Structure formats: C-alpha cells, structure tokens
Image (cartoon, rainbow, N blue to C red):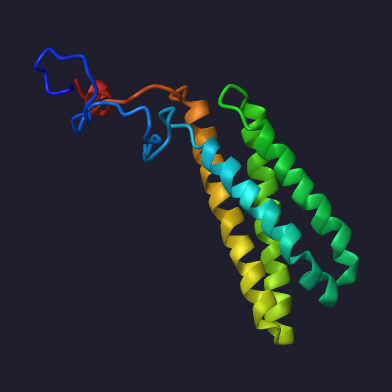
Length: 163
C-alpha cells in the first residue's frame, strides 16, 4: 500500500503521489517561460475553425475562400514547427498571428457593417484567438532574448544591482 506500512501491494495513492492512470493536469507551461504549446493549440483551433466556417465566408466573400484554406494550412504547419529551441519559429508564429488579427478583425468589421452577425461573431472570435497567439508568441520571444527559457527566476535576481 501507499500508506507506508511496508506492504508493496496495490492500494490508492496518497494525495501527493504520482498516479500513472491520471493525466498530468499541470497548469502553466511545462518548460518555464515557454508558451509555444499554447500557441500551437491556438493555431490548431484557429485552423480548424477557419475550415469549418469557410463555407459561411465563401457565401459573402467567395474570392477569400482559397486564402482561408491556405491560411488554415499555414497555421497548422507553423503550429507543428513551433519549437522551444528555435527562435525563428516563434518569430514566424508572431508574424502570422499578427496577420491573422488584422485580417479577421477587418473581416469582422465588414460583416458587422453588412449586418451578418453570425459572421461577425465567428470572425471576431478568430481575431481574438490570433491575438492571444500573438501575445504568447511575443512573450516567448522576449524570454528567448533574455535566455530565461527553462530557467526559474527567483525574487533575489531582481535586487542584484542594488547592492
């Protein structure tokens, strides 16, 4: 049992023991100061949403359909290439996320002005998702520039120069 009575039999694990049958419910990045996993997840969500909602965009703006499909492929490709060891992947993620924010916000404003509220909500949600992806990409880039990826920073490091 896990209660320390010397018996190596089964039993339920204690609260703080690892359980191989439970998924890791760790909140926050697994690598300190690296948020590329969030960017990857947001990109995959955005790519899926772009493909799912592309028929609705095609009804109002048929010329944008190839760009919508191509954009979904690009964000899936970049999500797969996102890597904590490569700064260029985070630069590409930040650029594409910024383009996604601008593009989908303009499309949302166009849908709003034409009275298509469902199209507005869908495009605005994608613009906000790309905004979060851009935020996490730039936050990771900042940490890459300061060489803090994978390092835990203590409070005492903030007071080094005062002495």
